[in-house]
Image (cartoon, rainbow, N blue to C red; front, side):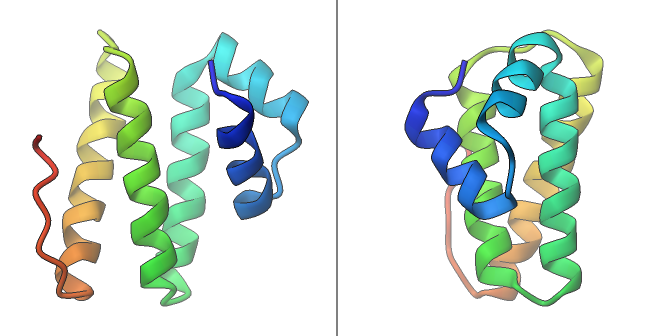
Length: 99
């Protein structure tokens, strides 16, 4: 479950309602991850690469908090890592995300 600070970050970043975030996150984490990834892709399309990179790092942190044994989440995680590396390259940031 997301803590209050994470909910505030999502609310400010993506205009998510706190009650809505809690419901999605608790019931279907795949939907949460998919929706956040879609919003990140909008940031990339709008050339907001720094913001997209920060949101991708946030999403990777969420993946690392819990171990998901689900093929849908594995696919979303792979997409997230791909876009994270792509944005790091665009921003010329050297990062080690595999820690």
